[in-house]
Length: 427
Ligand code: OSB
Ligand code: MG
Image 1 (cartoon, rainbow, N blue to C red):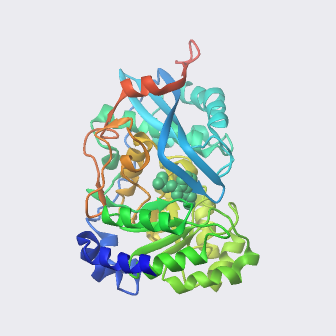
Image 2 (cartoon, rainbow, N blue to C red):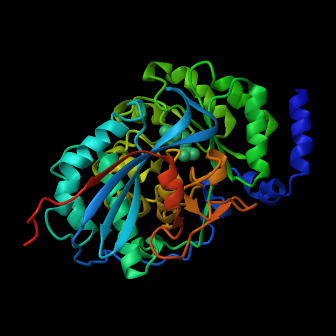
Image 3 (cartoon, protein in one colour):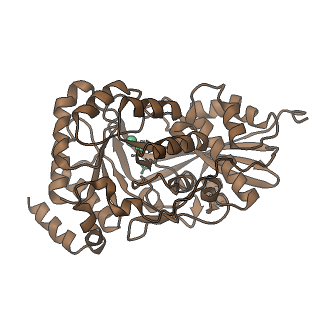
C-alpha cells in the first residue's frame, strides 16, 4: 500500500500523465480521442507502385545486440537479441529488412536457422529467378512455399525499402499511410518482483508511453494486474499471456474483467480460434489475437467466429506487407481496431513497424518503443525516440527513412552470406 501512495503522488506530479487523465476516465476506452489522433484519412492506393527490377543479390546477416535488461515472457527469458537482417540490391541501391524469428521456436515455429534455410534455398532464388515488378508479384512467388511467414516478410520488407529508395518515396507513402506520428505503448516482461514491475510501469509512464502492457503467466497474473491497477486507476492497461492458459482456466481468468483492461492478448493456444471465441463470449474485456493471426484468411475466420475484438498485426508473423495491408483493410472495413505488435526488433524492423502503424486503421498504441528501451546502440541513425506525448514520428525520407549504420552492423556481424542469381537466369 505504501508503494501505491508514493505512486499517487508521482502521478499528480507527472505532466504527461495529467494531460491524458480526462481521456482515460472515459468508460469506453476504445473511443478515447488520443487513440484516433492525427488521422487525416485518405484512401490507400490499392495498386502498389511497379518498377521492373533485377535483384542482383540478397545478403543475410546475423548480429547479436545485448538487451539493457532481460525480457521474460510466459515461454522464457532472453538477455540479448540475435538480429537477422536481410538486404536486397538492385540498380545500385540496397533495401533493408529484418526477419523477426527468434533463436528458439517458442513464439513461432520459425527460428533464425529455419528462416535462413528457407530464404537461401527457396525464397531468394524465387525472387531472383526473373524481374520483379511489384509487391504483389513477390507475394505470389512466395505463396507456393507453405508457411515460413517471417522468412517471407524479411524479403518483402527489404524489397519495399529498396522500392522506396529507388522511387524516392517513404514506406509510409508507398503503402498509403495517413499519420505523421504514431501512438506507442510499452510491453513489460515478467519481473523478479512486483516492486521492480511497478518501477518499470512508472518509468515508462513518465516517459510518455500511452499504454502499458503486462506480460502474464500462471502465478504472475491476477495479483500483479490488480496491484498495478490499484496504483494507476486510469491508465490504458493491457495484458499478454502468449498462450499460457487453456479454456479450462476461463473461470479463473474471468477475474481479469474487474480491472478495466484495454484487452487480453492471446490468452489461449497459439493457433486456436474456437476456444478464444468461447472465452470472448464469456468476457466483457476485449480479447486481442496475436499468435493466432497468421494471415488474411485467419483474420476473416477469427472475426466471423468472434474469437477476438482487437487484432495485433505484426508484419513478420503474417508474412510481409501484402498480408499486413490486407488484414488492416479487412479490419478497418469491419471496424475492428488494430495495433502494431513488436518482436524486439532492431531499428530496421522498427522503422517498418512505424510505417505500417501510420495506416489509418491503427487506432490503438503499438508496441513500438524507443531504440534506447531495448539496446545501448541501434543499427539506424537517428535512433527511434518517443515524444513526451507518447508518439513516434513517421519519417518522411525515402524507404525506411533512417540511415542504416552499416559500419556498426559490420562491426557486430556474426554471420554473413551472399546469395546471387544462378548464371543466365534473366531472359
Ligand atoms: O507477444 O507481443 C508479443 C516480444 C517477442 C515476442 C512476442 C511478443 C513480444 C513483445 C515485445 O511483447 C514487444 C516489443 O517489441 O516491444
Ligand atoms: Mg503478443
